[in-house]
Image 1 (spheres, rainbow, N blue to C red):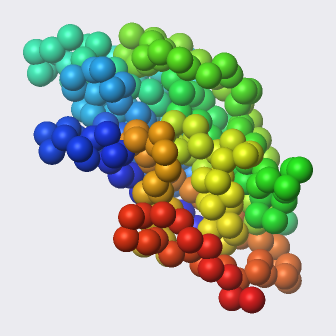
Image 2: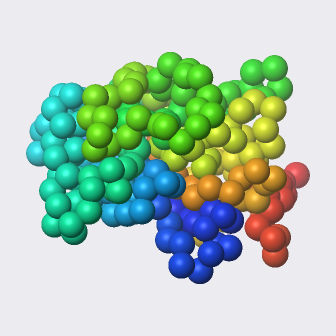
Length: 261
């Protein structure tokens, strides 16, 4: 099952004229699922257009069989550049990150392979419900850990067409694949309550309303737009169900864990 949501961050809601700069798209083809998530660079005046163009172009290309990351990056960069020329602006004004994930859907009991390519600082992670590491939910990034970005100089399309990171992972039955912008990914650290809240909520596929509520969490310092596409792989037939649990949003959007026990 697939869930997706994209919301404006608090920093953008404070300005009525500021638009959401994130975008996402997805498609299926035979035994494959393709996901693309983009985060327009905040300092770029038309980055929301770049993000929208990048996700649509990436999904179109992947669905048509183009899987080479370098070629994909160059073609997406060219599409963004063409859009910029049509609008009479510098291509840098459409600067955006992009993360794509390709899932090969296989047998019910066999691992499913996930390939991820990133341009910039949006990320893909795998989560196993019920698995903890030193008491924390085990969110595992598909690509290698990178140093924290401390400035707005993230390598972004269309000026940087070469991928910044690539990786693969295997999805076991019951696993969750999350492709998200850094408005969410930056808060999935072990000690962060957001990672715990999402881990509790996503032990099984939530309703779309609940998923939207989860993505729209409130936390000090979490002011950026946030976008998430999550694929919930079915558990093996006969496996015990997770402990029933639900999350509710308060009037201020805070996560509240409510168990049925």
